[in-house]
Amino acid sequence: MHNHEQLRLRDPDTRPTSAVLEQTLGGSYAAYEIFQEALPGLEMEQEWQWYTPYKAWFARGQHWWTTARGTRKEKTLYWLYVYEGYFSVAVWFKEKNRTELLSTAHVSEETRQRIRDAETMGKMPTFPVVFDITTVEPLADVYTLIDCKKRLER
Image 1 (spheres, one colour):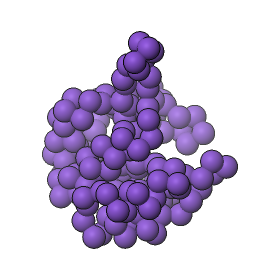
Image 2 (cartoon, one colour):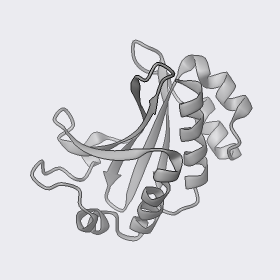
Image 3 (spheres, one colour):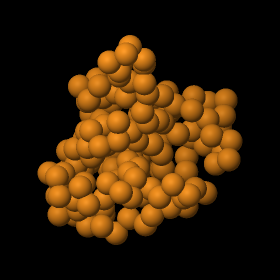
């Protein structure tokens, strides 16, 4: 993962608007727009939040659903971080799902290697699959992993 010192969007009073993101992301802003346009089709919404420990704005991709008993549930499916000229999307999985993810996800060999190489972190063993995005190329695998997370961790 990246050094959080390199994160952009460091002013708590400046919300990440389209203009701010376009200026920070430069040429990769087009990929960001395409990613945003896909969210409703993935049954997701993205919310920007200020995170004091990192002193930066992060976006959280969330999926909501209603259970059979009518309870509204929420699941965070990804975290998005902004750097100069690109953005990163991290999809976190439970360690117990790694094998199933490798056997069922229809993703590129490069992404499979990312899944294999991802280090387990935290008290509840989880691992991030991180994509640094400058073009639309990796988005298909990002969408696939987001869909897998919805299915595997409900």
